[in-house]
Image 1 (cartoon, rainbow, N blue to C red):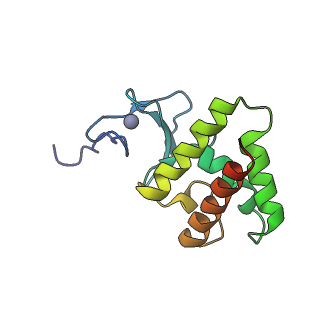
Image 2 (cartoon, helix red, strand yellow; image 1 turned 90 degrees about the vertical axis):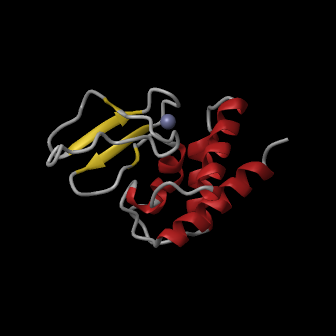
Length: 137
Ligand SMILES: [Zn+2]
């Protein structure tokens, strides 16, 4: 099958082929895992990363267009992940971020083209998780 691009696989569910979603174009593809329902974005020639809307993207959003991180970025990230959300949703977001920190699947800075380095982004995510945990019972 030379020249045939391999179907992208889920970065968490080994061997599971991703299903294309609406909105996929020549330049950008949006994919979902049929098992875990994680959604990915792919660009030509770039590795897959989580799609906008993933908890990590929400946490890193404030950093993506400003230098930092600062306490203000931390507040923004905590707010983005907790405001108006049910406790179970917040817990799920925390676990998803912790999982990525413990078992990396991708360069998280690629999700939003963050200007920070990968390790700065990951340190920031650790702070966000710690902060979310500290404000919860
Ligand atoms: Zn999956």
